[in-house]
Length: 262
Image 1 (tube, helix red, strand yellow):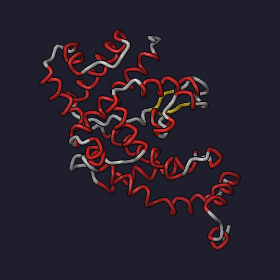
Image 2 (cartoon, helix red, strand yellow):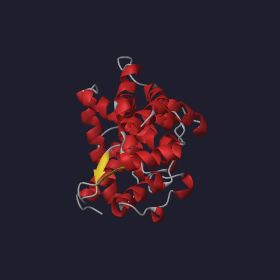
Image 3 (cartoon, helix red, strand yellow):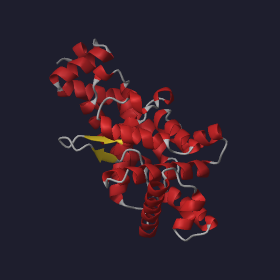
Image 4 (spheres, one colour):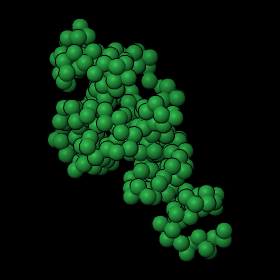
């Protein structure tokens, strides 16, 4: 297809045409059009990353997410592509950072121990466990627990882009896919991949208020941790800890569900 013909198409027309034909020229045109979005997301992720993580590398990882977003985007779902693509790009970057595995083994191990403690506690209590309860479960003082969380949140990559399988033809959904706008953060509005999304939405609803706000502001409103800190009137470090705790709680909840513990 000639470039001048593509240039005459509106964005909606390009998406419709690509959905019908999978023409590589149209795909390349879409990649070129949305390339700045990759740099934007990479810039957001780069904030707080260790110095040995290069911005250009993050951009390279994010390009894979852009390709994935273009292939899987469905214009009929009435979601803006930019909103959809941000999640995919960020997920691709996090996936690659995980594969590099730069997190110290001791920190990774401690993160797993806390997550397991949260899983046991919240299964038993039937509610969100407090920091004091988690510390006691781990045989730590509250001060030591706080220090440990600071260390984990500063180095560990815990993300809502982690994937959970629905069990039907290897269909899968990430936790981030289930976060809607603040006005529709309600399990009743979920109609696709119903069961896993219902569980995720209920788990999000049960989070402590500040942790829930951090997830919505970071993944839906696309604010940086620093910007969220300004909204919640807490430090950026505190926001990072709240984010880490929220992900741990959600993962622990889903692990309980997968093990058949309701």
